[in-house]
Image (cartoon, rainbow, N blue to C red; front, side):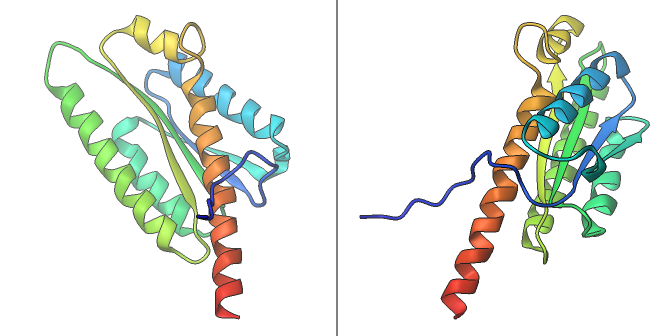
Length: 168
């Protein structure tokens, strides 16, 4: 019978960073509130949560990289909102942000100690869609990114325990 190893939502060990873009702040602040609330509800002390703000979504990958490379955090939650307009600007910002955060998540997971990096950046066609995803109709995507982060932090902890057991 195979053994299944997965994360859980038990109170995680370690500190958490929330990196949030100020642009579209009426959306991103709701995402950040959802993230903080979720961390606290899952047993993370206020003193173990740092919130970093940067100007916009395009700047998030650089900030997240610096935060993750500090090795101070078990988890880094990335929050922003890009809303489509009448120019291709949306595609460039959203694409570069996703690519940059993905690269940071990949390297942070391989670091010692690892950091879980989760993506809570909204990419919406309309303001209404963004509002819905920031807590109105479609839940709070900041909270969802935080749940994913908690699960990954706990999964990385289990992997570390397995690695230690195997090495002996």
